[in-house]
View (cartoon, rainbow, N blue to C red):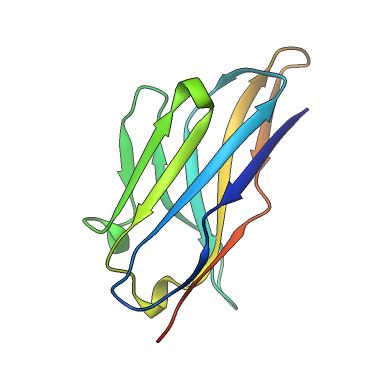
Length: 120
């Protein structure tokens, strides 16, 4: 099996920064594009950013210039550096990755989510 575990969420004031991490573990042969999604109360889950395994990044327009996604393939970990945070960034942030397992083919995996609250 494969697990994705997020960390780094919390409460931050507007204008502040947070860094989220998501570590994948288990029977991993290869991890493909890794993504961060978020879901605010009463809203649909939306893509925040994603990054291919060769480092090409893609961002939602609302976070361009403020958020940076990166990954460490040796550690099977993806990061999301969030700067200049706004109250509207408050949401549960989820990590997602399609993974080819050592045995048993492909699977699409989600982390459990980490709460980010931006408030004064």
